[in-house]
Length: 393
Ligand code: PLP
Ligand code: TYF
Image 1 (cartoon, protein in one colour):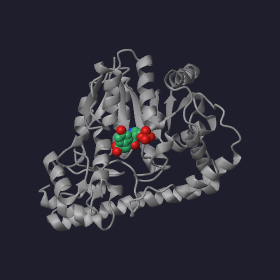
Image 2 (cartoon, helix red, strand yellow):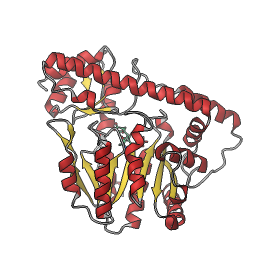
Image 3 (spheres, rainbow, N blue to C red):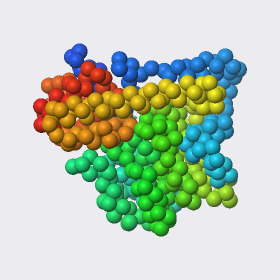
C-alpha cells in the first residue's frame, strides 16, 4: 500500500527554515518564515500571555473535554476584537480551530457544503498554503490580479476587472490586513469598492485575518473586515491568534461566520460538525490564554502595549530600510518598503538574485523575494540594503 505514495513537495517556507538552521555562517540573516523576532532574533512569549498562562495553570482543575465548537467566551472575545463591541451576536456563528490555517480550511469546507459548484477566488499572489489546501481538497479556485510588480503596490483596477467575473455563491478570499506575501494592502476606500462589487454580484467574502495589530493598529487593521461585515449579508472570517498573541505552537484560531439570523443555528451546528469530522475538540489552551488576555483589563492593557511595540518596531525597521535603500540607490524606487504594512514585503528580486544573496551574503528570504521585516535589526538593515543593490535589484 505505502509504495503507492508519491513524495510531496515540501513547504518552501518551512524548507528554507531548515536550510537556514543548517547554515554555519555566523553573519546569517533569517528573513524567511513569518514569525516575529525581536532585535536579538528571539521570539519571546509576550508577558501578558505568560501571566495569563500562570493564571490558567493556577485555576484550572480539570483537563476533561471542553466545547466541540470551542469556548463561547473565546468566541465572544474574538468577535469583539475583530468586529467591534457592537457585533451582531444573533447573526454570528463561531468555531475554534487549529490555528488560522484550521480556520481557513474549515471556511473552505463550509463554503463547499453550502455553495455547490463554488469557485474560490484568491489574490495573485496569496499565502501558498491557501493554494495547497484548495488543491488538496480538489476545490475549484481562480486567481484575481492583485500586485503590480513595478510599483509593488495593489493593482486595484486589475483586481476589480478580474473580480467582475465572480458569480453568485462564489467565495472571494481577501487578506484582512498585512497581505502575505506582498505587504501591499487595500485602502478603506478600496474596501468599499470591493463591498460594492460583492453586493452587486452576490459573491461571499472570506477574510483571512492573520496579522491584526501588526499593520496600522489593532482597530485600524480590522477596519476593512468591519466594513465588509457591515455591508454584506454573509461573511466568513478566518482569524489567527498565532502572531498577535505570539502563541504559534498553541494552534489557536477562530472561524466566524456572519449570516441571516434565521440561518445562525444551522450554521453553528454545521461548524461543530466540521470540527467533529476532522479532529473532534479543538485545542483548549490557546483559547483560554486569549480569553484571559482580552477580558482581564490589566492583561489586556499590557498586551496591547506589547503588541504596539512589536508593530512600531517593524515600522521603524521599514523606515530604516527604505532610507538606506534611497541613499544607496540614489532613487525613490524602494520607498514602497515604508508604505507596505505587516511582517512582509515582496521586494521584487528575481529568484537568481534571491539565490545570490543567500550564497554570497547569507541572507535568507523566500524565493519570491518576500522578506520578514521582523527578521531584521539595526545592524542587518544596512547589510540587506547593500546586498540588494549589489545583486542588481
Ligand atoms: N493566513 C495567513 C495569510 C498567514 O500568513 C498565516 C500564517 O501565519 C495563517 C493564515 C495562519 O497561521 P496559523 O495557522 O499559524 O494561525
Ligand atoms: O507565511 C508564513 O511564513 C507564515 C508561517 O506552512 C507559515 O504564515 C509558513 C508556512 C506554513 C505555515 C505557516
